[in-house]
Image 1 (cartoon, rainbow, N blue to C red):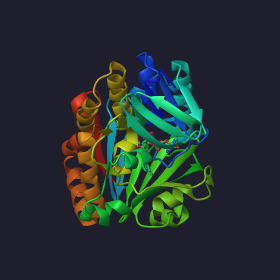
Image 2 (spheres, protein in one colour):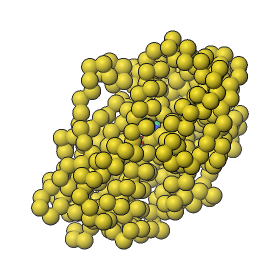
Image 3 (tube, rainbow, N blue to C red):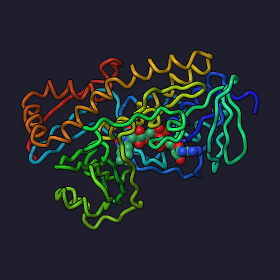
Image 4 (tube, helix red, strand yellow):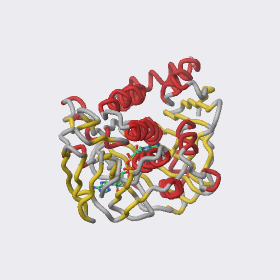
Amino acid sequence: MPGIDALVVGAGPAGLATAIGLARRGARALVVEHRTPPLDKACGEGLMPAGVRLLGELGVDLARLRGAPLRGIRFLDGSRVLEGEFATGHGLGLRRTVLSEGLLEAAARAGVEVRFGCSLRDWRADADGVRANTSAGELRARVLVGADGLGSRIRAQAGLDLRPPAIAASVARRRRGIRRHYRVSPWSDCVEVHWGDGVEAYVTPVARDEVGVAFLWSGAGGDHEALLPRFPALAARLAGAEPTSRVRGAGPFWQQTRARTAPGVALVGDAAGYTDAVTGEGITLALRCADVLAELIAEGAPLARYESEWRRLSRIHRRFASLLGFGVAHPSLRRAAFAALALVPAAFERLLRIAAEEEDAGEARWIASHRSA
Ligand SMILES: Cc1cc2nc3c(=O)[nH]c(=O)nc-3n(C[C@H](O)[C@H](O)[C@H](O)COP(=O)(O)OP(=O)(O)OC[C@H]3O[C@@H](n4cnc5c(N)ncnc54)[C@H](O)[C@@H]3O)c2cc1C
């Protein structure tokens, strides 16, 4: 298919943002997605203010979407509560199906073609770009963009998978997530992170009358109803609430890459490497990297430049994921750190700024506070 600058595999946030970015720069992108809408996915569904801003810049009509504005993040550990409030801007709780609908509409307005029910099988690079074998036949493009998520086949086929080190293999390699929604009025305008030993619960208001509850833990199985009683206060809030979605899981989280590019190929979003959902920053990072990748492809710049840009954009995120991962693996140290941060709100504020990747951008500030539950 002559004339295609990028064949984007995956219509998640990373793939659609890349395609919109390309179309807006005058380049031609075709997106193939093996599922059909509505596109759902296990996710905590909390967007940081930077992510909200980036969605607006992509042309997503946020005012029209059913969601819940977020004032900040509340961490609960035993009787201690640490709360961080966005001092400028607001976050957004948005069901994945709603986010997907908003991005697909923006993609259509930008002139992006999305082929649903079309799966990439394999591909090979040659002197002219990439020849892809899909369920709809052969497609040719200058660049193949792997936006095919956590278990990326493009990453594996390009030989970019990285085996976890032994220490990560033991805990991080088994971390996974599971989510479900409930019909209940949100009791907070913050994302709540309830810390337990061996499992955390993330509660995100996603509408006036609905909250999402995601559990992250290390181990096998995935029984949402069995994990809920490990958080008695949360279970009491949800007692009698009607579930509004079926249970969905994702993982294992630890999917690392040797590099983000191979000849004719670039990886973006979770496909580019993922550590853990504990930071709640996956979508924002995906949108940032998609913007840079679209710019480089549209310019015809060497793909190798994307590697250094990806490292720069994801550095703070990767560090913070490691830090929080340490807290997940060492509950007693986490509790001690929690107690110390409760005494020094300025240190907590700084940590939140780093978590929200706001150190460099300087676009939002946090107000931190603490109290006893
Ligand atoms: C439990 C959990 C909680 C999370 N909480 C948050 C949070 O609160 N905030 C946040 O910002 N992030 C959160 N994340 C992370 C966030 O969900 C991801 O970072 C984000 O979805 C990445 O988007 P993506 O486009 O890279 O991948 P995806 O959204 O997974 O999209 C990949 C797409 O590729 C398609 N695809 C795959 N293979 C093929 C193929 N061969 N051919 C065609 N199509 C294909 C898939 O169908 C899918 O639609 C969480 C993740 C989990 C698991």
